[in-house]
Amino acid sequence: MATTYLATMLKRLALPATRLIPTAGLHTAGGPLAKNWNGHNTGPQRWLQYNKVIFPPQPQQSTGENATEGPRPAYVCHQKTNIKYSPKKMWYVAAFVRGMTVDEALRQLSFIDKTGASHVREAILEAIDLAVKRHNVEFRTNLWVAESFCGKGRVFKGIRRHGRGRTGEVEYKHCHYFVRLEEGTPPAHYYQPAPKTGEQQLADWEESMRKRKVINSL
Image (cartoon, rainbow, N blue to C red; front, side, top):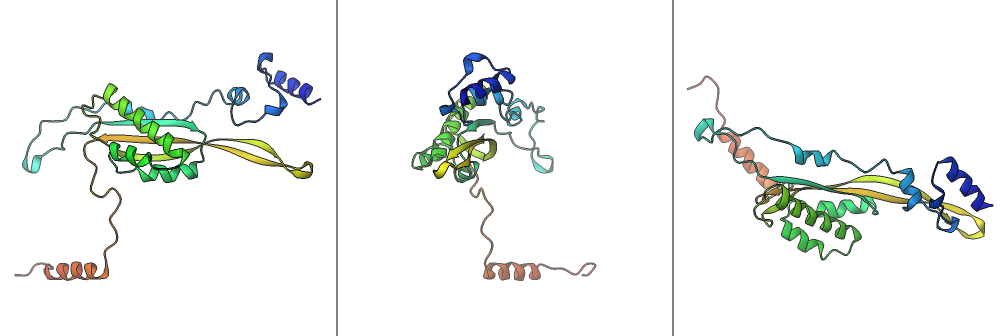
């Protein structure tokens, strides 16, 4: 009866008859059924559009007050979509490698015993190859992780069997990982420095009071 009902529902969805699967393996975490229901969604594409930005030519470098900005460092944006991993767990790994050089990030990720660390490591390696082959980065080690974050992907729901004939709902979560590598050396403090202590704030206040001046005075 269950197989007949499944075949009827698949015919209504206009799925080919060769894609029938047994009811024992019916779940929405992946496979042919999930692909047909979600085939039009290939993941986010806006992040990759930053690689196609064409900047106007910079004016001639000058010194003094009319000095222009320095050479713009090369960068590359890369993403890894539809990862079978929770976005809440991926956030810790993504935030860990921010501000590191690519060599240090790959070295640290090799010691993290998390599934998300392997996905982040693969994404960084792919971004390095992309930077060298398509974005004219001369030295592959002269890159650092300028941005690293994750986003929520599709959530497929399934059924989990419990005792006494009861069932529960289970969620198969996916996430997207985004990374931007930039050429050059990373900053000394990627995040904001720690707040000043009371003694440091008092010293700054005394210095500002000594430098104050009465306007329109001698």
